[in-house]
Image (cartoon, rainbow, N blue to C red; front, side, top):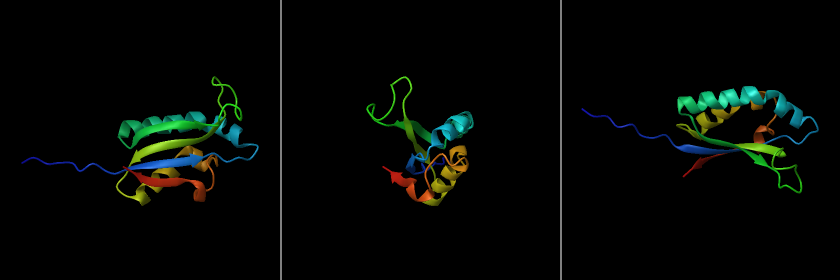
Length: 110
């Protein structure tokens, strides 16, 4: 008897950084923990894609040292609620790197 695994939906997460004066230092301080968490999520199959968002060069820095302004993720989850729970386990969430919960967008990605 063969079984089929129904793929879980993918969710696109838009998580802009806070804009207070200390946001950048919090990002840099917690970056290694965040990256390790992303690696764990990738290895477990939850994380489909991830990347940083940068400000346009006139507003930011050079390409070699970009002005990071947020994170995007594509994650696999059974429900929207599960996707939100996954986002809230990211170290950047606890470190107050990403903006308030109201500004984090999680939507099913087709």
